[in-house]
Length: 376
View 1: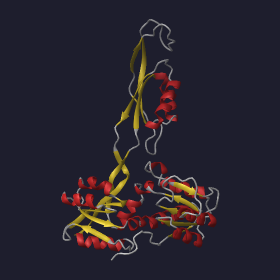
View 2: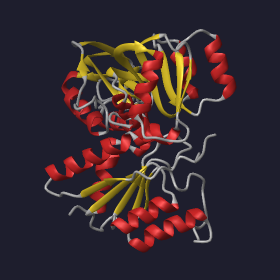
View 3: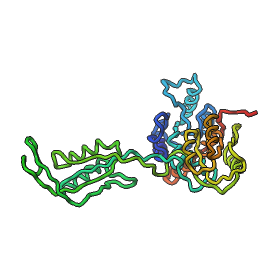
View 4: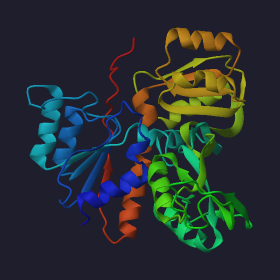
């Protein structure tokens, strides 16, 4: 059986906590990293009922989408619902891990799972995540010292691009000119005299967070007392497969037919499926966002989507969106939309650990934790 830390590391590889929104609370909430894990349960919400279900099954870890403690607390006494929930898990020896906004945008995450459940092909992020802030360092180095400087900045983190590191570019040699002034201690040349040295131009990209370390490493390895260099901030770019929401295509149907497909693909709730638009409208291009997605309404208007499927649409934003003549709207239960991720991540974890020779049992909770329990 794997240790809890092994399972946590795997989930964090797929859904890095650092990609969560700043207001979010994700990661391991409770549990001993050294404990063995044999059973892993999955749910959207960690309610008292879900905690009791996990405890009764004998789960060693409960993975949920929505945080138990989104706001800071100074304690979790069992005199409150949240306290009782955690007390149930602690009493059963069941660890708790949250993957929220870090799972929303990820490859294999919530929006992608929802889009797949609705039959979308050729999926792309609706709002691609920007690349990590990047700089480019350019430094002029004597030819014979170039290899040392390149190695030093690479060891400090420059030149890491995707699955590659030590990436850099060196231009053909040119002539560097300078005159050391009084008080200087030149590596080449003489104080008061103009010197020429054959130099190369070395360039490498780096994450902005590594700027100070890389520049310090360059200065330490460079033979000059005052190296000539510059650091340029590279413009952010929308890249990769991560980002908010998804957009893709389906076999063309009417809006009414598509709404029926949505209802069939998602778990039943009292909320049901609400539609804004002409029932006979042709639908081929579909945008989706798992969870509350009205923050993407303006983004959707700029696409060629025929319909936008999401949750928690408010009256005024939805009404104004419809008035602009853009895509139709399909509003579904928040819980139902995000539940589609659970079978996907459950199977992914089981397969990965089985392949590693540390199999676990997984189980997806079917308890409906949508807060709306009746519709008249």
